[in-house]
Image 1 (cartoon, rainbow, N blue to C red):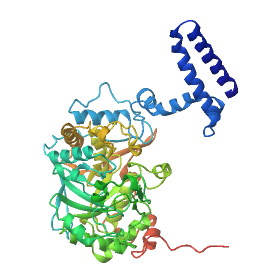
Image 2 (image 1 turned 30 degrees about the vertical axis):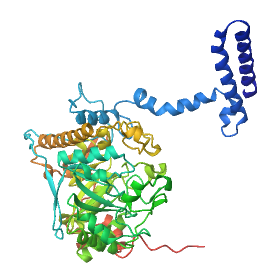
Image 3 (image 1 turned 90 degrees about the horizontal axis):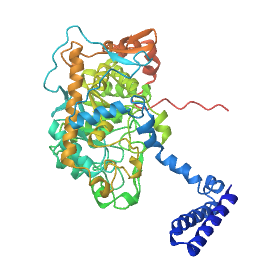
Length: 533
């Protein structure tokens, strides 16, 4: 095909050139494009990188063009309102409408198959209540906390400056300040853009210890103490793992470590910046728990906790045993689901590593209840939180409050282009290109963030009131239903084993006994098994 098509283009280009010279200059409109196509075809045949182009010169470019625009074609012309991924069109539309302050309702009835296996729902009461006008608050602060914080039901989840643009961070923080909810900094540190709006901050510290880092990449307690003392910092959080990529670290190439990024993170300019997979400050569950206590002391008694995507239940129980043994507990634990978002991660980690939020949340809640620690620790849920029903579901499954990342990005203007890792975000949300993010108007988008958060919490309150409940504190697993097949519906009380307070300490039930017995507060995981030759 290649040997045939290129000579044909050459003949046509020559013929058009001849007509240009002999008949009219108007033939240049044919000669020039045909000549260019011939040169492209010649290059395609000679290059060795793409087999398709060598076999189908010029025509093969159509394949790459269609591949390039496929996501847009899929999103705008093919996918149905309820089956898009990661977020379907209905969910995205609700976020946009609530952020803009428009109606946010839907006509005619649901498009979802309510009799499909896996469909989850709640049931209303014959005596519904009037929802409270004020947003509920959750007090974060255990017995060792001296500066408790009143957390909103929905907050901005962890997103670093660097992953998001300066204007996106500004809009999120200003919106949080207007709406009275918290803004998690992400592990990239506290930037000037986090401070401009004056919103409450949850300072997240990852394995790179950015913002509280020694020159060799360790933890600097003095830097941490100084920054945690800022009145805008309301809580401090240690990141153990992230839902979309649990168990791996990150690398920021040296070329991207600008003076601004270097100053925020406390790293050298132009030098590759590495977040290792594991922390250097602890190696056992007991050391983790004691480090949390140290962080709280350095932070002046502010609420201190950690974030993780739940993996091994045995390791989670080992952490609980360490808490019980040392009588030291975090003030909060944030559970991130495997369906959570990220700026960039390997496909295999996004698809196959870590527990989904439902399983991770219920596992953590049960572990804390079973060890008698649940009343000292608040649980936050993050991972694909977007609607009022998401809040209701997660609180019914054991959470006290929720955090949203991608939904907040959509409130700022994200269109789910899924180009976060390319620096070519078309809406200026997930890019460091000033030509792209300059169009993101901070004043307008911050108001959208505020409206989205308030409308979503209000919708959750409306659902709770329709169930005849006084508030989210009355939600429980017996109020959330899942259709398991075409003939049966079960509540989450029936679907999962829910432990009684202190049950693991007394006598572990059969399905927990092996993990409870093997959990060691001085070791993560099991001892390595012997190899057999």
